[in-house]
Image 1 (cartoon, rainbow, N blue to C red):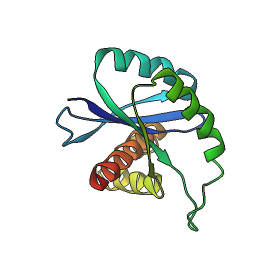
Image 2 (cartoon, rainbow, N blue to C red; image 1 turned 90 degrees about the vertical axis):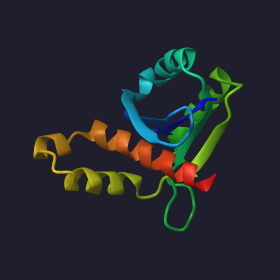
Image 3 (cartoon, one colour; image 1 turned 180 degrees about the vertical axis):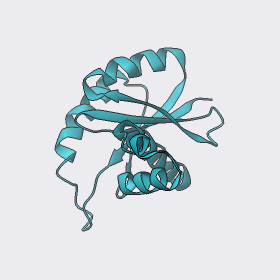
Image 4 (tube, one colour; image 1 turned 30 degrees about the vertical axis):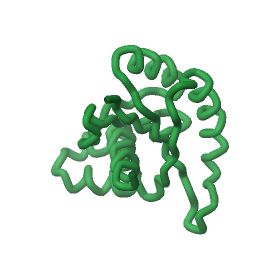
Length: 136
C-alpha cells in the first residue's frame, strides 16, 4: 500500500502533507522552496511508496481557475514527466490558507509562531489532502 502525498504549490514555498500507509490520517510533512521541490519529491519517493499526488487546484468563487494556476501548470508537467507511474489528482483548494491561518491562530501558538508562513503552507496541504480523502 502506498501513501497519498498532497502538494500546496506556491511560487516561493510549497506545503506538503502525506497519509499513513493505510490512508486514514493526513499529516503535515514539510515546507520546501519551490525550486527544491522536485529534488525533495525524488528523495521522498525513493524512500516511500507514493500511490498518487494530490495537487491543490486554486479556483475563484465563480469556479474558474485563479490566476495562480498559470504557475502550477508548468510544475504539473514536470511532475508528470518525472513520475510517470504516479497519478496526479487535483482537488479544490479554495479557502485552505484562510482555514489554516484561523486554525493556527486558535491553536494557542505564540504570535511569532503563528506568523510562520511555512506552517500555514503545511496546514493548507493537510486540508487539501483531507478534502481529497473525503471525496474518494
